[in-house]
Image 1 (cartoon, rainbow, N blue to C red):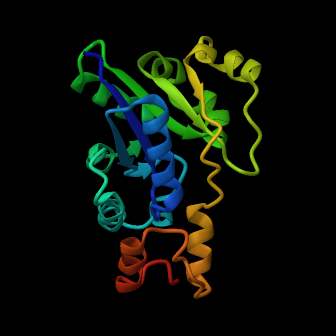
Image 2: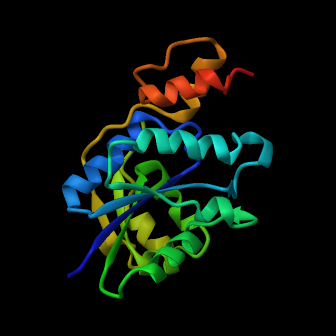
Length: 202
């Protein structure tokens, strides 16, 4: 029996309701058996001091996933030294599953537009399908431009029309610096964890 496995990566700094909605919508729409959330170790495009320590981001993910058995968490990128590359993460996951199992990499339209600049995008697309989720404020990427950068990508994209994720981790961090409320933006246990550990206050 073919298994369908979703993968959702990110810094999750912090994880928010939009991330959970993306995982849930992709699961419902595509019949995914599980969605593996992969917090980044050191993202290639961000300096080390720019992100919250991995132990906090990992614990917030665990709190957000509680009660959702279809969400699994992988620490592969946190444990891997050096910059995090999606192609290596997907290759590692690909090796864990049967040859016929299908991997669906979930990403926003904004990230999809940048995918031709990622490390080994052709190899990445060869190992999985891409689940493109809309982001308010971002146009749907042009297929011709994507195909020019990564030949064959057009046939590997599954376009979702929802959820319309209007929240971002950057906005949440800014609100916290100003002492604003975040209760509607992150799961309750995550909000409590942020308060208890005084994250994002400086």
